[in-house]
Length: 308
Ligand code: SF4
Ligand code: ZN
Ligand code: ZN
Image: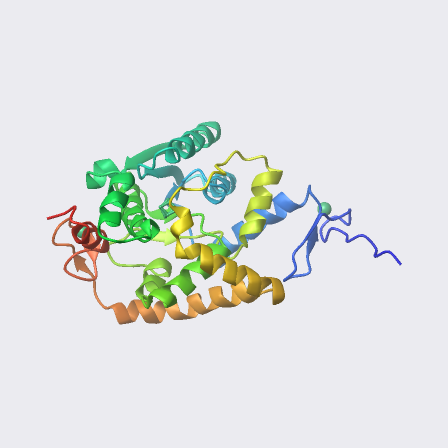
């Protein structure tokens, strides 16, 4: 006997997508609205943004960040005293970042959002490709570990320099669950506090997609025909993140909801880790906020022999 077609939870029409963890189903026309409402509810419930915020959206050109820009542009219209800008980091990755930046520029232009680009070369005096060479000469294989630290500081600097009061990133539920497991595997849980709490000297951060699975963000981008970069970064293959992603996807397929459980643990742990990390001071080299004498970016650059 054939199963009855699943019906959209909102309009009762034929659904094309069902959330395995909630039982909700959506048709093509209701899904984007439901997605936008979910993001808005999350922002309000968690008080991620304030009505007078100058919001800097980190736009890499990938599906998450560009979709976030589209959703926030809609939400921001209801808050006339808020401002929106986009910041992009050009790490200097040959045959990859130029296309992403072109997509970021096209999307910000279409949406009428001011857009600023900061390069690794301007901030650190080197492209990521050169930093990767220095890392390889030192026997380091994971470029992403360095890039992540340097990008984080670059975004902080870019957002602050353009007067933003909050930096918003497109990290989704999968990113968050992966990052937490990677922190555990590296034995460095201080990342959990830095990533989820308000850290002294750093601009406030918000992640409106952090409870939305990656495939649901991808579905929004697809249905809204949002142009985004689909080519993978050439350094992504060497990342431990790929192994962690496969592991989490396999667990989630067998036990829907596990990624939410990991995300929930992050929420509980982050205030404790922040308290454990103690006070922040100023980096002796660059003057940015730091838990030690040197900030993590300067530690990375010094370790690679790029900073004296
Ligand atoms: Fe940087 Fe790795 Fe992301 Fe490439 S994949 S942009 S190297 S963090
Ligand atoms: Zn519907
Ligand atoms: Zn520093």
